[in-house]
Image (cartoon, rainbow, N blue to C red):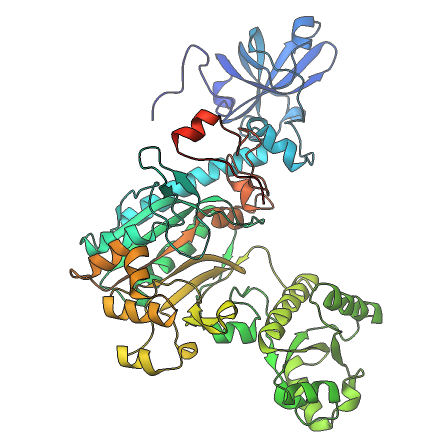
Amino acid sequence: MLSLKSKYRTHTCGELTEKNVGETVTLSGWVHRKRDHGSLLFVDLRDNYGITQIVFDGGDEALERVRPESVIQITGNVVARDASQINDKIPTGHIEIQATEWKVLTAAETLPFPVFGDEDIGEELRYKYRFLDLRREKLHHTILVRNKMMKWLRDKMWELGFSEFQTPILTADSPEGARCFLVPSRLHHGKFYALPQAPQMFKQLLQVSGFDRYFQIAPCFRDEDLRSDRLLEFYQLDLEMSFVDQRDIQAVGEAVMPEFVRAFAPDANVYPEIPHITYDDAMLKYGSDKPDLRNPILISDVSEIFRGSEFGIFANAVENGSVVRAVPAPNTADKPRSWFDKLGEYATRELGLGGLGYIVFADEAKGPVAKKLDAERIAKLREIAGDNASLFFICDEEEKAAKAAGKLRNKLGADLGLINPHDFAFCWVEAFPFFEPDEDRGGAPKFTHNPFSYPVVDSIEELSTRDPFTIKAAQFDMVLNGLEICSGGLRNYNPEVMKKCFDIAGYPIEAVEKNFSALYTAFQYGAPPHGGCAFGIDRLVSEITGFGDSVRDTVAFPANQRGQDLLMGSPNEVTEQQLRDVHIKIRAKN
């Protein structure tokens, strides 16, 4: 490592200890905090590496006028702190510097918000002055941790035998499910580049080129509506492998992710098993394809228990095709009526349900639902709920009931304190449906997720004759604590299978040749069976470090929730000449 010493400093603000007592040192940094004790003035001096307390003789009016966040240089003697003044919270807390010389390198204006402390600052102000926001301890530390995480991931992939590649940022538009950012071409009139939603086709082409093991930490761009876990520009650990099956790809995730968590969250309890859960089971038992396995609550389908029962609302709904999902709440039999009423209000307000039926299992089954059920049905429901528990019921169309039950499960897990924030539970969700009904095309099949995935069929003939909605994709997600952190699968490398899949989804061969021309052509010259996945780095950093309420707090210079960079002022207007250069005319807003 290069020395950090220069004419501005002999040491950093984070390295001096009792071993340095008696030395004369020079430090430079930002005035983090000042404390005037009359005869003495204390300054906490901060740089990237830490904080050192500087002691000045009081009465220096020039020093007293120095504002917080001004950059100063000091020279002085290292002395040991009195025992009563030791600060064990910082590495330099056993010493201080008695300043003999000082000067201002740059003076700071009055701050728009304080850098010292944990005051809650509005997002708009923070992003406008992001360079100040990044000086705040918590965020500064998060960005440094992210830096170490990136290096760790890169080193690990090299260790596992992957080669690092870079793929183009200016590329062609392709229909991958999200909206692309377009870049007009100056040299080619009326034509556009696109920023990549992912390096999908390039990494597959690298496999066709025979490189066998690819990875990169790739920037990706999607012109989507924003939310707390989504950015317009994000990074992913992207990888692809040749001559592999699904388990080979998942083995890479299992070799990397648990160790990654332990490296950066040493106190974490990482569940030793990474279960494989089918999409259908995930939707049934957890009400989500992103299940949080820290939550022990399991959802059950109790439609048959209510079929033909005297609880007419549910019985009639089941006969008409609805389902009934049951969500248990352990150790809630002694909850007051107000607790159940609030959950009913939540179901109406947040889940869009007409109400929330439930049974309380104490010594006997209680509640309006229980009064309409015979002893045999009650016994079956008690077996699901357990003693001293409540069982909540959601009756609706299958997809709506599953999602509502999943949200209720999450709420109960949080409200009842069933989730340990120090736990990290991974799982694989797989066997996703390849096709789903397209309501805009009268229910005709469309790709559910990734059109590049391979269908789980034995032959093209089976692909042609099976009900498309029963076909599964060789696709999977890795989920951590209810967050999708990875998506991947085996790729559709066979040109004939590719044509048939796109034909089922309503794409004529001409559309395949146009939209995926490079990939389609390459596959006709010998393509290996291959597959891969991508891990979302921003979500991983957010979840593992526990810093920040959104992925934007893990990125140095994020856009706000409206996709605006308030620091640089983008998106911004450009001149008429700039528009002419790229052959663009702005139309009136529709």
